[in-house]
Amino acid sequence: MKMAPIIRAFKAHEPPLPCLLVHTGQHYDAAMNDRLFADLDLPQPDVNLEVGSASHAVQTAEIMKRFEPVIDEHGARAVLVVGDVNSTIACALVAAKRNIPVVHVEAGLRSYDRNMPEEINRVLTDQISDVLYTTERSAADNLGREGIAAERVAFVGNVMIDSLLANLPKAVPSAELLERAGLDAAAIADGYGVVTLHRPSNVDAPENLERIFQALAHVAKRLPLVFALHPRTRHNLERFGLLDMLNMPGFLVLPPQGYLEMLGLMSKAVMVLTDSGGMQEETTALGVPCITIRHNTERPITVEQGTNMLVGTDPQAIIRAAEDVLATGGKRGRTPELWDGKAAERIAAHLSAWLGR
Picture 1 (cartoon, rainbow, N blue to C red):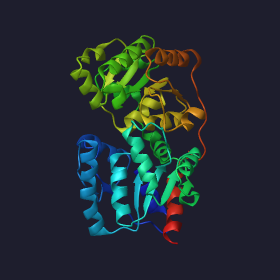
Picture 2: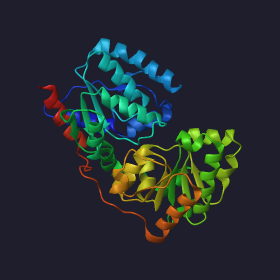
Picture 3: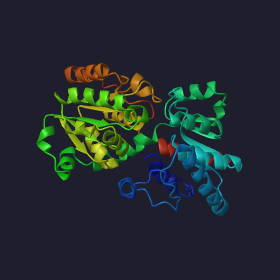
Picture 4: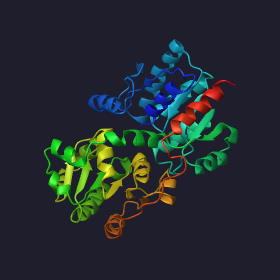
């Protein structure tokens, strides 16, 4: 979702910015991967490292091992990485140690929770990056406190919103999605909520997972909840003997969905309940109330200006937030600065000038 608009902007820039698209294969479900590339009109990668799943250490090391020969074969004037996954830090480390400039898109976001692996990836990637593109102004303050010079930082906006605005007309209607899955679309005719859960802190401990599901079951008595079930969450429900919780009244359970399907679900939802970082941004852009089941967020602008409510994992807090949305319509917020669908264009213009120096 972040790379597709960047690739398009590079091609459309005058002169075009030549690039080699490398897919590490960190997210390895073949069917979901192929669908995502098609949905986003993203060209097939020039190189696929096919790393697959492993522990954080093994996966990061394997990406580094497989990415370095790509640099040897093709060379690079710069390596651009996005976000905060293991691929981000692994490829940035390889480039930095080869004295190749690192460009980080979505820099400076901080949850200040070092228990989140993504936070480690964010902090370290920013430290070794030469150009840091930020999605919100507060990110520059975070980077300044960490000793990163202001001239390395450029506020460009949010490429996730570029993808959202470009693809919203193609979003799959929620009723059609339920019918495809053999579920009763009439169940959501009067409104529905969307649920996603995948954070280890929420789904890897049976007591946490059960408490959150009990809160969701309470909400589902008043509002049907369409649950796009992450494989990790399903696996843990089965492992902990909690799989029957999926059969509670008001739950409409779907397998993992593609990007266009999730856009369709979110855009018409009464509320979204999630622990996803990206969905906090997407719901803010869509004007849909978001209840974030986490104690912190690396995207504070979605709370300060957008539709996001950070409620933690206490069941009563989750229920209260949902009841508030049902009673009042919830937060509507406003669209943050430069979340206008043109972030990738600004990146292409800035990077072209920077490389030409």
